[in-house]
Image 1 (cartoon, rainbow over the protein chains, first blue to last red):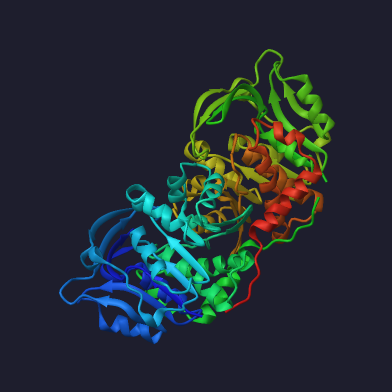
Image 2: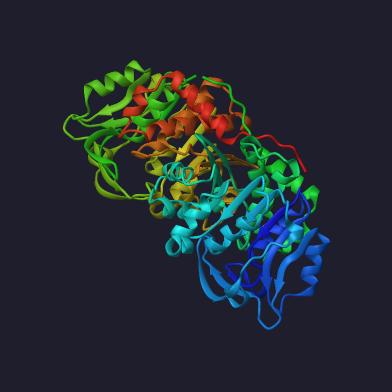
Length: 307
Length: 307
């Protein structure tokens, strides 16, 4: 099984209540690849970087089974750079700098070697680029997952709605689900979104976990209560990597298996936030993942002895 | 098994985005009793009301197995009255009016007929009154549960700490846990609180569920995602009623059984918020509770097929 992952590869400067880093590897496709490659390979990355993206990072990704044919390297420009400062609650942040650089002309091209991939992750970018990726695929993947953000809901809603009609799973946070539908109630928002195209909706709530909606069913996965969230950057993309990685590994896109996949995503995200950038993700072993997933089982399991 | 429940019995005026009521029955002991009496009787109420508290309400409580010997009726005063307005998110509210009336001189006296009760719920009130109740009991209950609020943390911290040292379970919301410990991280706050006396800590997070901490263990119970939260007033006391009701019915105060009890509490709370005041609680049947609890099972259960 193979997954195409479209998204940014970047440098981030991050400040949290626990410290700061001036320049660390970031980007949606990077986090996704580091998470998903624990479950399945190849992860076929589609992105664009400048002349400053480290060879060593690219080599490390390759070593983990990430295909890089779809990563364009622009020789005379710099990579995307984002800088932000998190507030104490870690759910809110201020963006300090956004230097699009090479991302300003990002035009994802799917290499022939990527055709036939069974899974597609469309990381957050311009909705018209996301739909262009789908159109470039000769065979529709088994499952297409879409991420987006408030900026596109505000500035590119018609394109976003068209892209939404082409995908299977939408993955957004609670405020984006509200903004997209005008419904404050997440349950009502979910009902509306499930009529826009996706059969599945995942609503990420950060430290409050995630909800999966499908037809009239709902599943809830908690976030692991952590002593410290060190750096939440990339947690959403890491979650997506664990989620889609598990689905691809098990070749099962049923609602039941998506529940387990969300736990896998939550487990991977719980590692991600323990260190700056993707550092922690590079260290974790399959044994670490297994142990962490067991903590999720213990976190929610209870016996029912009804009244 | 019997439960003593100490707390207010009152009138509330409530305004939510969905409507308003000018005068409806409220109070911590009332909500607790309506919830807990589904599981076990007697619920032995300790409270104070004025000359305006309806006979019919008192009769209805008695019919449900609530003992009222410990409810003082003050003939020449009015019952406690609270009025509040909820914001759209239903997690925040403005208090518009607080008329203490009879609650201003509340001095709980445990009747002889209440001695020997196995469970004690200390609803939110002056910490020195809560500890006086414990001192009045000739035999220590099997389990003592304490509720409190930010006001007492700010104005009566030494008394609160003394009371905390006498109880088994503290039940607070996330902001109260933070305020009590000065720790932003709920996990760190929990560790500190578990050194103040209680062996168990329940952190209520409203629509985001509840956490149970004990030693190094943690359990998470979600809130049921609802289309509309109509009126959250009393949800916390109702949660306490379901929680303690289940423990008393099963005569089992182990950590494992507390997990199930929290699900019962969450189920009862999910009914509470569906109508103004305790109206919905008066309607629910044991069959309704069983069906609702099954929804919680479906909400969180997943299969694990490890990596």
